[in-house]
Image (tube, rainbow, N blue to C red; front, side, top):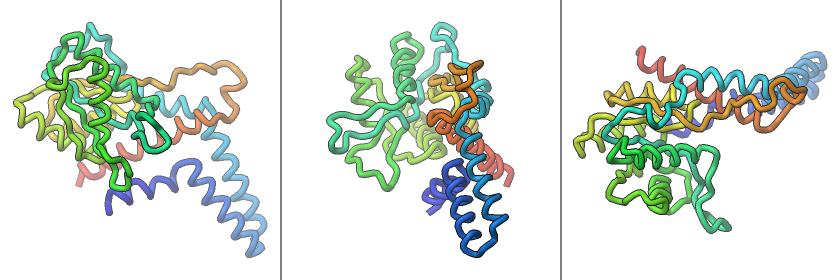
Length: 258
């Protein structure tokens, strides 16, 4: 139940969910003939959606996360026992897909492969199970393993956590796998915007990890142009991701303080 609530409740704080709630409230106010409140709620809904969808806001919010752990060059990355590779990089080949569908976070898998080939680690630990409502027949970790093997990484170098459903469980199950195989140090590979929350969770369970961030998204491609202040669906996604990460960080700090 907690997992379901953690996925559902934030929807009403994200820009699209909040906008829809305000629009619905405006409709109810209009029905009840509270016209001033209806107009204000509708204006607020449009303003929130517009602001959240501008690259200026989305990139600013997400950049505050990404700048905490800048990416390391492969040559400057320390040697460790294993890469700990977090999932969220693909969608399974459900019909009509013929193969797994890779998303923007696939940089994580590329980075893990590069670190292995550079001799920085001997193992790649893939932490990526499925959510309970997934219709996939295999875990994401297995699909990622197939991809790494296709890229030339030996199967004997891969450790799979196929059960974890969120970042907290990634950390818990990764620790168990590392203890089982006598691994002490890790290179944590995830998206730069996700790194602050992920690193805190891994450190909380006692894993000695070095952050190896990748998948930077707040690049500022439109900065200095009029488009930087106009609504854009990619910027809206960036704002939503930033809010999700900040909410997760606050919830984790609250739990740790209890």
